[in-house]
Amino acid sequence: MNYVSNRMLNYLEPQMYARFTILANQKGCVNLGQGFPNFPPPQFLREALSQEALTEQLQYTQTAGHPKLLNSASYFLEQRMGLKINIDKEIVVSSGAQSVLCCLMQGLLNPNDEVIVFDPAFDLYRPLIEFSGGKHIGVPIKPKVFNTKEMMQKRFQNGQFIYSDDDNWELDFQLIKKRIEYDKLAEILEKHPNIVVCEDAAYHHITFGNNQPFIYPRCISHPKLKDRSICVISAGKMFSATGLRVGFAIGNENIIKGMKAAQTYHIFCLNPVNQTATARCLDQTADGIYFDSIRQLYEQQATKLLKGLIESRLNLNYWVPSGGYFIVTDISNIEIPNKYFIQNDVKVTRDFAFAHYMINEFGVVCIPCSPYYENKETGQNLVRWAFCKTDETISEAINRLK
Ligand SMILES: Cc1ncc(COP(=O)(O)O)c(C=O)c1O
Image (cartoon, rainbow, N blue to C red; front, side, top):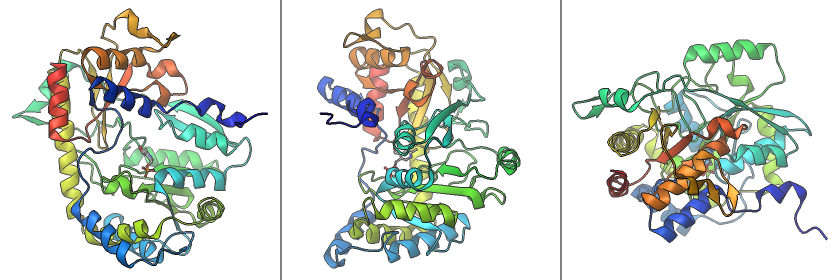
């Protein structure tokens, strides 16, 4: 008897993030691995959750989303992004951006449909595509700017790091591209009317340098791309509460229709307390003031970690983030002791060997990036470090890397 379907066989082991978190705990490491903030969420979110828990009816609500949340999201998106959406047709809410993406794949794909994914890509996309019968096709994107330690040092002036418009490397799976690049994409796609564009905007509120949060160039607001696009948003990321499990997608009504059907026969509807509490939070933050402070906080933490990595014993090369939660570094200059290339009797790629080297000899967890590439060789010299952490956590990591 088969207890597990064939499509699950490759996914039975705990995810890489969980494995590294377990190791971090076992070995007393500073965890810059998994991308969750280790500081408390805003008080207004806690208050909204407690108030809604006392009054919300706690019955099934509309499968596409609680009306209060649909209205608040629509108001928020208009205020912050200038988008007008039809709440009956162009939005669906689900349990975090992950579940929204799952509904997208299930609602959209037919067997053997090809999904082009620009690598590095979130390692969630492949299973979601494959479980829905699609074929994952990874196309690597090379970062434009490669900064050595010396180049990075020069970019620190008066204690401030200078972010540039060329820092387009973003391991948060949405490269902040220039408007001209989207124009080019639109031109190419004109010849391919069946292609749908999915923009995973989980980190669209955290941008650095001149990139404005929410309104940097993107597909969902591009005149020629918007009608064929779906944009996925995570309220959990927006309110630094990854356990909130509220996400939504906006975009083309025909695609949203399939997503709503997928949602109906999957979870039916999302917990209404979380939805109405999120609605309150969106109303309270639609003026953008909260997000200005959040963006500054993350930029400050990114800068602190960048500085620490530059001053560390490690001779790394850097791609500077244009936002999000992570710094990606190239480890090709690092000599890694041979013993770390074998883990549980299996030979591992350089990035995994490096991560184990860091855990065992430096007491710091980072995440290997080869899983984000179709061709593992392409990513085997890259690791990522999360800066969505408290000052104390980042300082401790820096101390250990000195
Ligand atoms: C790029 C990206 N998309 C989607 C998600 C899932 O977000 P959520 O926690 O809202 O499910 C994540 C979570 O790490 C992510 O990094």
